[in-house]
Structures are given as C-alpha cells and as structure tokens.
Image 1 (cartoon, one colour):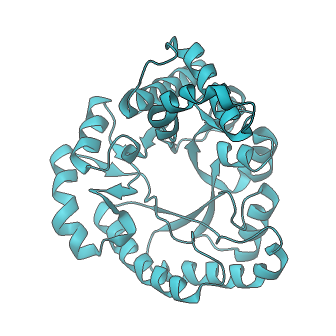
Image 2 (image 1 turned 90 degrees about the vertical axis):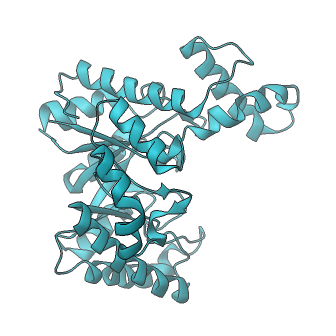
Length: 313
C-alpha cells in the first residue's frame, strides 16, 4: 500500500492551508518544510507542541518525514554544523511527538574541486548527525541534492556503506539526479537497494522541473520495478517545485524575444511552452501553485494506477 505525502508548503507556507489541501485530497500525510513562514528546523519541540501540533490535530494530519535542511551547509562551516546538531536534537523530539520515523538530511555543500578533500570531514560530520538520533526510532534519510557531496549515485552508496548504520538510509530524487547530469533510471538501479523513501519530482532534458510523467524521470518503469515487482509499500512524497512555472511562466513568455541571447531563459521558455501544450494552457494563461500541485498529485495517482498499485491515503 503506497502512501502519498507531499511538500504542501509549495502551495502555501500557511499550515492551515496545507492541512486543508491534505484533507481535500483525501490524504493523511505531509512532509513539513516551511510551517507558518518558518523552516521546520527553527522550531524547538516546545514551540512545535504549542504552535503547530494543535492545527495538525485539528485536521488529523501526520508526518511522513521531516523535510529538514540539516546538512545543507558548507562542509567546512563548523559553527553552522554545531547549530544544526542542536536543531537535529529538537527535530528528533518533534518526530517523537508526531510518531514520525524519518528526517531528511544532506551531505554538505561544496565546490566542484573539493569532493576528495572534503570527504573525511563530510563522513565525520554525517556520523555526528547519526549519533544525535541514537536511542530514538528515527532514521536519517539522505537526499541526493545538487552541489552536495552525495549528488551522484555512487557517492550516495559510498556514504551509505561507510556509515553503515541502520539509522542512515538513502532517499531517491529522480529530478535531482537529472539536474546533475545523470540518467534517472541508471541512478535508481545503483541506489535502490539502499533507499527507503522516495521524492516524486520530474525533470526535462533541459534540467528544468516538469509535471510528473512529462520528463526524463522514467516514472512508469521505476514504479513498476519499485512497487509492482519489488513490493515497496512506503511513502511517495510529492516535491514538484511548483513555483517555477506558476510564478515565472508569464515573465519568461514576455522575455522570449531575447531567448536567442540568453540560454538560461531559452531553456525555461522551451519547458514552459512544453507544459502549456501538455496541459492545454494558452501562452499567457496563468496558473496558481495549487493547480500545479494538483497536476502533480493526479499525475502520480494515474501512474500508480497504470502500474497496478494500490494507493492508501
């Protein structure tokens, strides 16, 4: 039974708005990131209990994982690391309050020429994060993200094997692999034995996000292998990055006359026109973030159905 979750802050940072959409879709789970204008990691457990949990209880919303920014700092920034260790302690307490088993983390920002030099420190600091969840039921899930140590599949597996701890696992994000220049299907086959959690985000060949099923994520094949063949029964968490198309589409249409001079604008313009055609949108027709999120949600449900997957909200 697949459980659909999502980064509902992509529609609004207002928690009540997020919860209303969860229930409108007939779902139960969300992955908190921005909560009432604040990052989830900025809350102490006491603040969370007082300011956040009453709204969650009102709507019966649970957490699939916590979408924290832990590890999304420079590998050599020791002050930021110490601060994040303290934040992680509070997030573990929040997990206990919410009966949540996962916290998303990253493996530190670095420059292209720093991978080898940074590795010993990256490994040591990740092990420090793992020590902070000892004695709890929380598993740290490492997301492959752009411009961090674990931005490509083999380095993700290297971290997994070197840390070698049951409270450190991998989270798979197809779009992030594509944006880093890797084939999503090939990356999946390298990391799938070590992944316990999946973000659903698709990406075009131009490395700009698109509604799920429109890009290079190879989701029909992935879902068949992951769920129908291998029996995965965990979370599929929507992280569609709705803001790019919803917020910038009209601007980039207006700028299309200079696309020949600025490749960055050109690729966004091409992708936005591709989405327009796929969704039957007129060139200057606007769309809000909620509509885009619904495109993603309905697209995932359709793909799961085609894969013969039972979905439980």
